[in-house]
Image 1 (cartoon, rainbow, N blue to C red):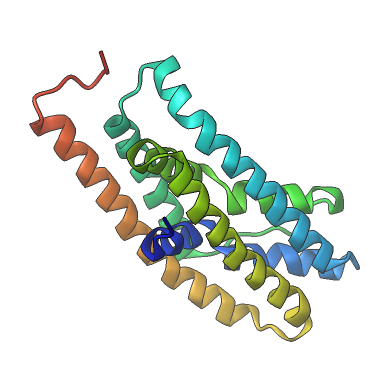
Image 2: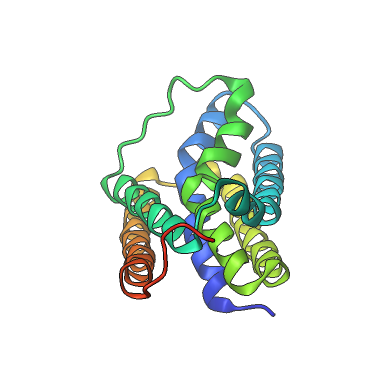
Length: 195
């Protein structure tokens, strides 16, 4: 049931490195960074699990086909990848009480992550996606705990470089999602709207 490829894709989409500047902000504000890391990961996992269960239902309610959503989700993933590849986010104005929410969503479980999870849950089923999601969050949680312990010694320049590199992989994933969705919509002979 566990799929290493899916675990890595989810982990790339969660992109824990994008949260490091916000964790630095928590450190500078003398918050318990370990508690912020754990609370953020748990809140993000809860949001992700909710969307895995509700996503297919939302398709039915709004009459959206999986492939139309795959194109839309691919666009969002490409935009996230471009944002990561360009860098330059500034969280200096973030209020102390909003740090956990900011890390949980949109940094960990933003539209790109949720789009990917919804599409995968309709393709392969809810249980396989949940198993891989929990495994990906275990990996992200371990990274968060390691970051929380090492935060006084971390060089943000290296973190931003790796995050930009991961952004390129996300752009590729988004293009792949869009290409697959467009191919099915244009060449399958089926209607864009489900029956």
